[in-house]
Length: 398
Image (cartoon, rainbow, N blue to C red; front, side, top):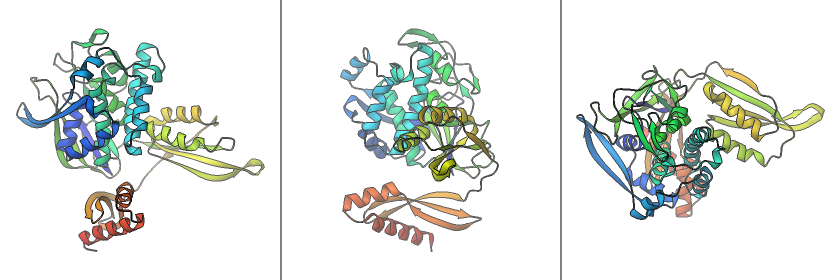
């Protein structure tokens, strides 16, 4: 599976993430085009530049707010409900929405705990500003483009000293960051700066699995660097390894199961969205028959073990179930996968090539790309799919 490993020896922030993703191969034009779907393009300008940090070539991304937005930001703070509404109303893909909302929800829970408010009522300050929204949604766009399925990360360097926040000077790590990195290995480092920001910490909390160094089965295709704002005694960069991980690292997995015979079936679509946003790897339902010949659904949720409690909470809150089975996944066999792109006469289409013991077993075309091309050219979806698979097979020599 496609994976990244984030080496946060100098901390992690939103602009460091975006810079690393761009150097890793995400086209700037694609990022900008997707960000336009948020409908706030008049609020900011995206400035991207090549810089050197202690001799390391890196990409620096600066989200520069226009004068009107900068003035408004000084007295307006967006609530989690406002951010959710904007993202859900956009034309971003479902996967990008799920990733972005998962990050924001972790931030909202942390801020809510610090300020004693429900997550949806939290008024974000720093993380609700336009630049942080662009950083978070932009990171989700980049993960989707690179088709990253797993995120691994090192221990986090937090920094030292104090940082200016909306509530005044706060110790590093700021309270929300301290809550977000609770349970994650950290070090303060030697620098008198905030190195891990709320945006970076929320990304890690929502999507990453800790690993002390590259997972044993991680094969890196490329290494990229995203630059931070500071000039420090150490390179202020985030190092990103992009590659594949055959077994998904050392993280244990399990399946949560519940038999449900008394719930409105309309709820399942909403439930799927909530579970994926909370970190589920897969969700499915199976029609079954229960006692007294009642038709029912067996809900199954595949998850990493560390997200088990969070997902159980979603199930108990959103369904009528009052009990779950936890089934350990002892072993999982996976075909190796690579991403390929082909230019069809209908447009560019991503494809997936899967192999088992060196033999190609599956070639498929990305549904969303084929759907977009079919709609643009008013042709049947299956026509675009066939054309894309044919070209992929020709490239592979079969």
